[in-house]
Length: 331
Image (cartoon, rainbow, N blue to C red; front, top):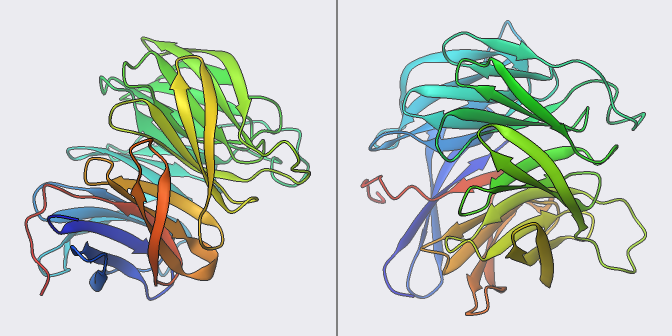
């Protein structure tokens, strides 16, 4: 396998934190807890040897979520915990010291300069869409805009960096927009719908979205309800990978601008495949299987298909990142 591959995983339990995982040339994974933090929901690289950690509820006297920077050298927190001013923040976007968080229960988008935008409305699903549920925040490729997926009201919002409204666009009713990925040229946005078992495709230009297609990612004989989670684009822009929890699968799709073609459904080798992360220039990938407390490791074939190698145990793994800027070593 060549050089050692290093990645980090958030373990979302009360006494959890961030684990460093190191994959050696024989396919073995060594893990070590490097940051202690209560119920981390998302992690993002910071400068040098540190990570931003988004925590579900780190405050004893408040239900609000919080985000803080932690050193990977000694595990200590750097600075204060910043409240996201909302409950169950589940996703984070970072550019330098500018932070944006998605508050799922509160249905709001927060920025580290103190701004908060709360959505309103509801969707057609009487259980999951009684109010807004912001599930993610992403930068546009030029970093001028913030895009936010709202599962509760089937919308994608676009804001400027001061959280001023720019535009919005609808996903199919009841689909539940969750996460997104931009095409390599930035002209299209692909949105994984949590409840629709589908990907909605939008053309994109200067903060404006237009829905041009929605493609099912479920097998033709599937009769249940979809449960999409992660969506990631390959480095060359030719493949999309999504995790689908109702079928316990990783789905590989060929990217054709405003259309997608399913190439393969791969067993996630676990339960509740929440995140899928490409590693080492797309030579490998990991899938965080939240409900059976495992991380599954895959190599990526020349055709771009994940091939299962092995898996390790880790409590409630939610997301994984590769941090190539970090130079700290396993101790």
